[in-house]
Image 1 (cartoon, rainbow, N blue to C red):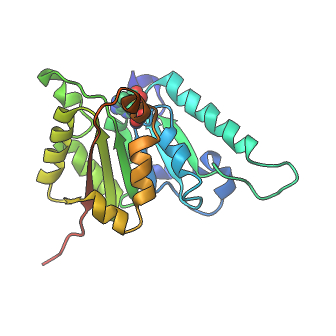
Image 2 (image 1 turned 135 degrees about the horizontal axis):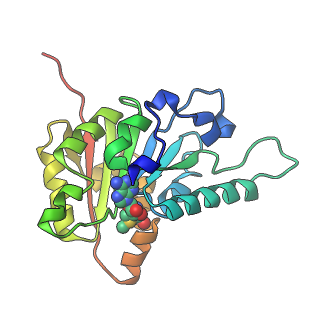
Length: 226
Ligand code: SAM
């Protein structure tokens, strides 16, 4: 459980240089967060597409988060030649073992994220388990806090009931507005949408089983002061 984990008291306490050694000293912090990243497929797909954007996965399972960490270390080593002093790709992705439902603001500063991903989250089918869902009014307030105005929440699932749940909660929350897949593609986010559909282990499993995928994306709006 959580008490076995050491959590940073605030994002300023996270040693980002050790997460992203190639960016040490730049002051950069993660801009993309993959919540419940599982085996890391999204991070690995996006890393070479946005080489200057730092990305962080959050995963609660110990073995799974360790696996992703090992995978990133291996990818970095494979893609860096000893002769070259310039680091290769995958320097911009990292992972923490964390319960995102409790500790998201401990990792991400206010308005620091431009993208937040919830890809094929655990459905928690039974009504009494709905409070365990990763999208809820309380958590949406946290997600709105860490996302910058204009930032995008990407959700996808093969469970229609969970899709409706995430969509209606996000629609009801005043700081988010729906954004269509067409609009996202028109503003150059097509490669991100493609990765959301196909890059993760769960997304591939749904494909193998010829399941349907439901996408719902939202923009963090700018608050107009009057
Ligand atoms: N996003 C990945 C994909 O598409 O392949 C994984 C999907 S899997 C169904 C859901 C993942 O979320 C699991 O790996 C699970 O351990 C993780 N998870 C569930 N609750 C979490 C929480 N509170 N904090 C962090 N990760 C969580």
